[in-house]
Length: 261
Image 1: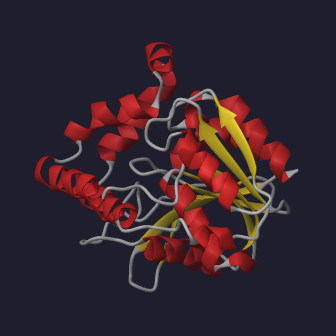
Image 2: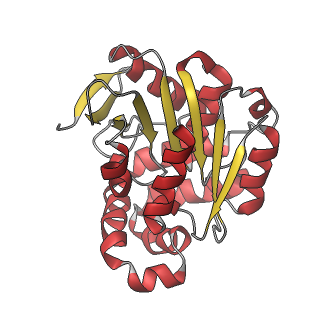
């Protein structure tokens, strides 16, 4: 299926696509900052055997619109809910990585009836300080995505994987380069202003937290804190940096599949 679009309440077009058996339970995937729905390609063969997989481009990313101004986690969460409403989907299993995991936390806190089970990968409930995000926003607005590309890829993958994983890294780097600077900056503002460290304890959905042992963006203590804060959460650590689903595609797919049953 090619990408299709829904329009949110504030007029933003969100791109989405669905793959897998029509009668299977829906698994909703949410992408990281600076990527698109294609970041989940390494898991699609495994997950479409058991799930109807719904992917979408975060606001400001991929084929979705990139409205002017800063966004919020509330707005990104509403985008996911309005996508489900438009497709008449009541409840889903959810897997989000990095920014997508922040959207997942919001859903678990604010829209618990829409979730069956929740996977939060390489993510955090708080990513300060705000000044660092302000600096990144200023940089991308002034100079575009190019200055971020090399630094981001270095944080997304371990040096060992970067040395041997060119075929996997190239499409991810291309997604980053193609991201609309305004959309990237808008989502940076959402991360800058987010703090769910206390409210994340309200999540009741069965939850799997996946972390990367060598993740410099959301280090192991961030994953461990999520695991402690959410009652009954399971914690799985993979030998990877930030984009664990790309660096450890099989282990990531198997961990999620085992959890979702």
